[in-house]
Image (cartoon, rainbow, N blue to C red):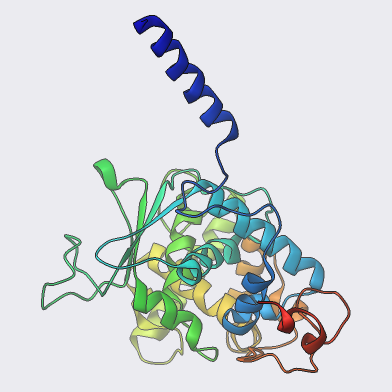
Length: 295
């Protein structure tokens, strides 16, 4: 009798592993097809996505689904909804959209906090200032943490140069070679390293002297410079190219993306879709005649 029960439980476990719903790690069931309401949300809230060609939007959406299938997203003393997950996944996809098969191999979980936190992950300490962090050591080695309000703020300000989600995922991009050091060796060829270090040095001097529009936090060290400059690169590519052409050329090579040429322009975010605008589902119909009528 006991043996029969154990066999039955074993078979049930195997069936579950084989046929369990996708997306169990991220906290929701990831659909096979990208939902129209997700597409509409991205058009309204993620400037980078809104500026892409239709072909690249499809690549972006595939990246979102793949990320949500693989990475758990957990709220710590805060709720996590679909919009939160889409912003986390968007943050992950933006730096690597030119690498459709990319996976952040060291990442297993993203933690969302209700507020900023300190280096001990305490979000109640009065001196907390951290809005995002790549975890390190022990159980935190495979974790990234975000302040949920800060994550949303990075996408709310379409004209801003800062985005904590992009910042931390650039650190993970940098970490792919085993170390966060400001030199993404997985992509950057050896002969490009010294010129890159020289650019960091020269720009850091300008930042410390107050002669640069790059966030001075990037002067902290090489890894922070890469992350801060990359935020600017992805948030405001045309302005970044105008102000910092040499940096733009290097980051275009690193991320294999000439955003200033391919995007329709900075600040293209649409906060609402008009009744007579083309439907975001790409049906060719007006929004009022297509997805606007959906429940």
